[in-house]
Every structure is written in C-alpha cells, then in structure tokens.
Length: 291
Image (cartoon, rainbow, N blue to C red; front, side):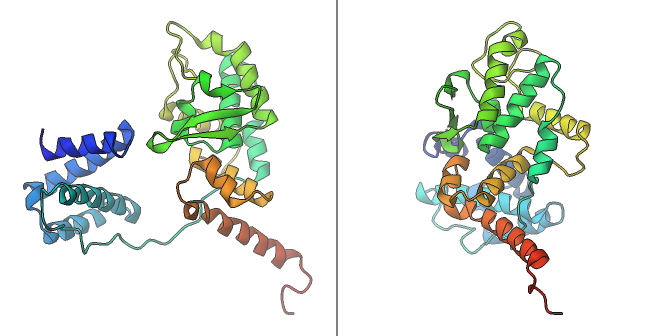
C-alpha cells in the first residue's frame, strides 16, 4: 500500500468521510499529479504556486480554494505520518472571496413551488420529498438516502445520517408528516418493481432516487409552477433556515437541525434576516430617512 492508498484509507476510517467526498479528494489529487508530473513527496512550494496560478485561469475562486484545501489536508497527513519533513503548503493561504449571502425563497415562493397538481404516484412522491426537504432543511444527499426505518411518523421526527456519518434527529411538521404518510401508505408500494429497497424515495425503475434525479424533478416542478428564480436543493435548505430564524427560532436549534458542526456556519443566516429587517425599517418607519 502506497501513501496515497493510506491517505484514502485514513479519510474513510479516521475521518469517517463518505465515498463521494473521498472521490472528490481523489479527483483533486489526480489533477495535481497530472500537473506536477513528479512524486508528491518531492513537491516544493513553487510547484504549488504554479498550480494555483494555473487553476485561477480556469476555475472560480471557490473551486480553487477547494483544491488548495484538498492539498493542505493531504500534506498535513504526510507530515503527521513522517513521510515528509516540510509542508509545501505551510505558507500558502486560500484565496480571498467576496462572501455572498445564501439564496433563498420567500414564503410565497415556497407555497408556489409546493402547490403543484397531485395526479400520479410520482406526484405524491415528489410532494412528499419537497415537503420533507423544506420542513427539515436536509441536504439532498441526506434526503435521497433517507430510509423507511428512520422515519417516525407517530412522534413526527426523522433520523438523519449526515456528514461524517453523524446522526441527528430532526422534527417534521404536520404538513410534511401528512404527505409523507400519504406517500408511504398509498403510493410507495406502486413504485416497487423488483427489489424492496430501504431508501424511502424510489424512481420510475423502482430504485432509490439519486441526487441528479432529484435535481431534475425539482427543476421540472420549478418550471411548471412558473417560478423564475433559480431553485436548487441548497436554496430549499437555506429557505428552511431563513424562515425559521425570521419566525424567532434560536440559532443553536437551527444549527442542530442543519447538522452544522460550528455555529459560525449557521450564523450567516442572521445577515439575511438583518438585511430583511433593515429593508422593512427603511420602508415603513416614518423617520427612517431624512427629508
């Protein structure tokens, strides 16, 4: 086993990362190997700088920073395992980015999105998926991997297997519970073709829905409901958090439901709400602006 294989095993067993995340790290390292064309233990800081310069010509700042982060993690591993003595990324920092606030839907736009005709079993499945996603703020990967056994409709909560294989309990409201129960009791069995999978949401082949499949469904519903704003699974996740905060929920509770390790990640939603408050103040307070 070489040091690359050891690193990927380390990510899986020690860091508890999922296969898709590990593949992303592997993709980044493979690109770097193709660029430097040398043993990774012989890489110098100049090689790193040249690589970053190359990436900046083709990728966004966010994507370049992801590559830098991947390399930093890898070389930190080589240092800790005594493969190398000096870290070529020790003096390399991520690029500065303009922090943009998350995009989200208004409550009216969410109502528009969720108000589509329910005719086929697939419509009821889609309705249950969107209601659950908006009611819980799940990541799309968490939604499509949600298992039947992790749904407790009696107590109105779901058990979510999140990032780093960390489990959390998230409550679901009456509306999401209603449509989830409707789908499970009346329509899910119609989607089973051969194998009865543990995953809750099935596609037209009777297999678990994929992330790409969900994105395709979401885009179709967006078009049919006439919403012009771009909608992604993360936009729904941001909408969930923003609407909770606007309604008075505390940041710590939102952090727990979203599965954020650090509350600073969740804190960005306070900027959204503060911006909304400022707009309302400027519009409606009689002395907000000087004549």
